[in-house]
Image (tube, rainbow, N blue to C red; front, side, top):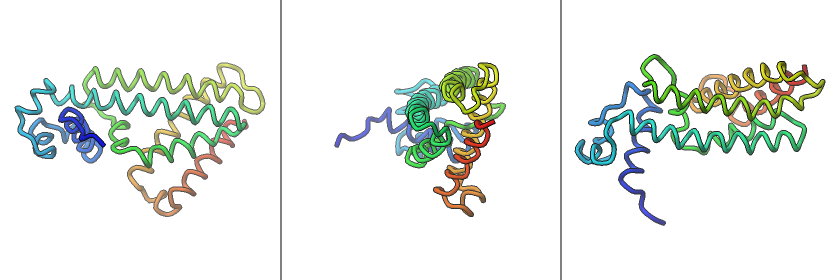
Length: 190
């Protein structure tokens, strides 16, 4: 097994810090200290903390969209839209630092905000493909609204699951995923 490169280590460290404290927790000095490097070593690989975070979020976003597409395909094949939640929450539980991807706030740089927006548009497109085939045959406009609602629900569920919030702790991750799946089934059934 190959050792991660310094660049990968810097990126993973930045995502870990962002997952714990948001983008505000990121400084080149904090990234360097947590990675066991010096600030000049970080600057050698990245021009700024925002560049590190942008690359990490781009990688996480790509993995998220791939997982969403696989989950949506499974849901389409099974005729059970709720399967998206079960598969996606399972994927998120196994994905280091995914919580960093769902950060939000006024301190996001325009390139990071644009990247997250672009990914959400792609996610809505994937979900629209699922909601178009929902029972009751919603119109394309209704399916689009359902897709936006499902994206919001899925992002909130992933964030809650990653944070281990009270409802996740009370139900357990498996039951939490099942409850979200049932909610998706109810919403898409009309």
